[in-house]
Amino acid sequence: MKLYFRQVGQKGESVFLFHGLYGSSFNWNAVAQDLGQLYRVFAFDLRNHGLSPKATFMDYPQMIGDVLQTVGQLDIFPVYIVGHSLGGKLAMALAQTFQDKVKGLVVLDIAPVDYGQEVLEMHLRVLKALKGLPLEHIKSRKEAEIFLSKEIDEGSLVRFLLTNLVYESNKYGWRINLEGIENSIEILNSFPHMPAQYFGKSLFVFGEKSPYFHPSFIPRIRFSFPGASAVILRGAGHWIHYERFEEFMELLRLFLGKSENTLYSYLARSLRTI
Image 1 (cartoon, rainbow, N blue to C red):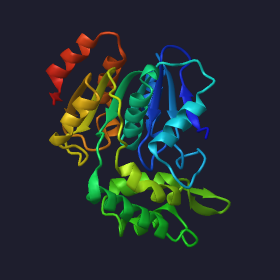
Image 2: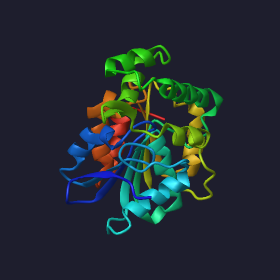
Image 3: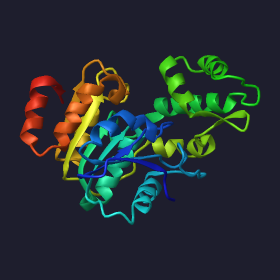
Image 4: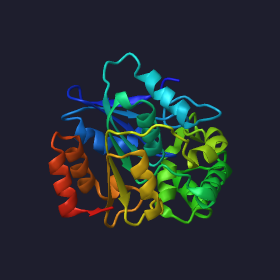
């Protein structure tokens, strides 16, 4: 399927931005506006998210196909790819499948692993809460927030999820396709077996306080992405590009720049490398 995307910038090399689960291209707005001064930036709504079409199922091969079909007529490859969470897994899978199309890879707070039963159950609880919201009786976003807060005890997550609640035709509804995501959540929580390694330059950035990082993930990253650097941003949780915007942008600009030595010098001086 062809995806909805936002383009910022008309010159320079191309950068693809992939959002996380329950997100949209708008999550990248500040990043895209910054990069758009020097690059052509494409921020996508993945299937079942944002303004892109809905489907009963989604997996990584399908999402790769969506991206390539969407930009098939554009002469823009090779491109840099930046992905957060679910979008990071998509970015990794695309790089491993089509190495010649990817000039560099940046992955935010996710690893090429199956995150297991605990994370899967968390997503199932979130989806149950979203599906249980009585949309026909909700009269305001505040009412929706109060209802969801009884089921989800993380306020920042509730507010993020509510970015998908839209008011159209005199009623509230979900912009994301909850059924399609729920049908696919076990696949999305895992990571497909990829026979190929990606040998291009890549950067993995994890939040110090994030539940999505464990030291045991590093050998898997090193094997699948031999050219990878991996760092932890101090004080950051899962939402690195919000919580540490300036630090992340400095890292990203250095990565996209021509001098790898400058990037490595910065990493050694300023960040906790892994």
